[in-house]
Image (cartoon, rainbow, N blue to C red; front, side, top):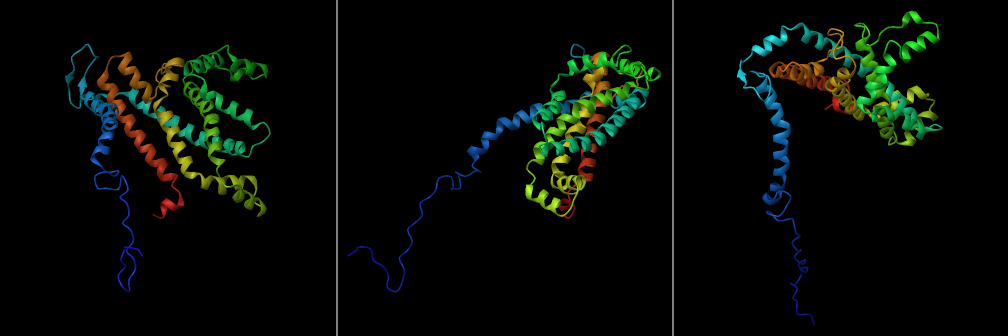
Length: 318
């Protein structure tokens, strides 16, 4: 007979559950000991992310030629100088033209190429490598390639002469009317294929039965691509559009430095190149950081605009 007594008319009490480790008040995910592990990452973020942003706003109020010189506080004088400078206005115009051409051209073309790759046509692996390769070439090598292609005796003019269109030949990088368009064309060459491969990787996760059902219903290739596949990856499209926007806006200085140095005149000067030129070429750190603040504000405004334009229907109903 068992020594455990059971009350009359009742059930045996369930055994007490063993206390699981990590469930206690002091041992869970909110434990102070565990939260201390986030301190190094927070310090890193504060020093290397927040710190430079704060420093940019501070330096914008100084007259400062460099680290070996003593800075002088001048308040808003740099701001007035920048906004009265015609070079700054030309740089703003060129930057806006650059992103206004590159993004609307690059993203649709890259999406179409990515969709084509996602259907796995014959030789799609080779195509993926070819599309991705321009993004793997260093900026210095890219500059050397296109310096030769776009020089007066280079490949572009040679091709025009070969087909009897000598009159269209020009010094592409030395002509004020073609310097910026040439840089935009290089941006597109570098970015379309790389972005297409990323789109193809994302489109590969679209359910095949959805595409097959659309084909059975009589939907054509373009309709499937834009009315079915595109809405299903719209959030990813928005992310890549933001990244390409920031890449175009903030990193054009290197290519301009290699090919045109902002010229002829200011015809290819962008805001990112103006930041470099004023800081390192003319030793005017205060001016350069005011331009940097403007560049930051344009970047934030552009991302908010892209987010608003590419919101999914589900986000609009919230």
